[in-house]
Structure formats: C-alpha cells, structure tokens
Amino acid sequence: MPLSLTYVDWTKKMKQITLNAEQKNKIKNAIHTFRKYVMSDNFRADQTERLSRVNYFQRELPPKLKELSEADIDELVVKLWASRMWGKEVDP
Image (cartoon, rainbow, N blue to C red; front, side):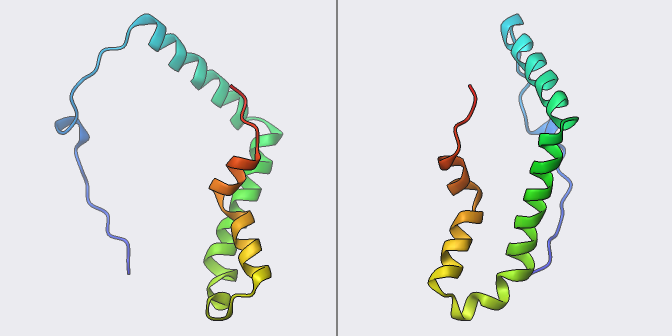
C-alpha cells in the first residue's frame, strides 16, 4: 500500500501551552545533550545499527516469512527496538 501524505496545519489543531522557567531550562539542556550526541561517534554507530535493522526488516526478512525457523524468530526478536531497550540500562 503506497504511503499518502496529507498536510495538516497543526497550529490550528493545537492549543498554545505556556512553559515555566524550569521546564524551559530542562528543554534547553535536553537539546544541548542531543546536539552533543549527534556529533559523537556513538551517534554514528547507532545510526549504522539502525540502518542495518531497517535493511533486515525491509529486505532480508520478507523472503523468510513463509518458512521462519526458530533461529529466524530469535534474530527478529533481537533486532526489535523494544527488546533492545529492555536489555539496556538507560541513563537517567
């Protein structure tokens, strides 16, 4: 099924919110941390890993679907983002 994109003017659908100083500071710090991450070797490694998983799910997995083996299912579960998150400790 082809993807269809529809333009939505979110400014007409969302109510304006007001942030206090603490909330603004937290957002500012998060943006700073994200920008540092984007410039890091970790980001490049994470991107490579994500692209590898996209390739697996788009190209490698579909031909295997009719006859999935136990090993194929194990590989599929390992590549799922949610299963990876449960196995990784996340920094607060």
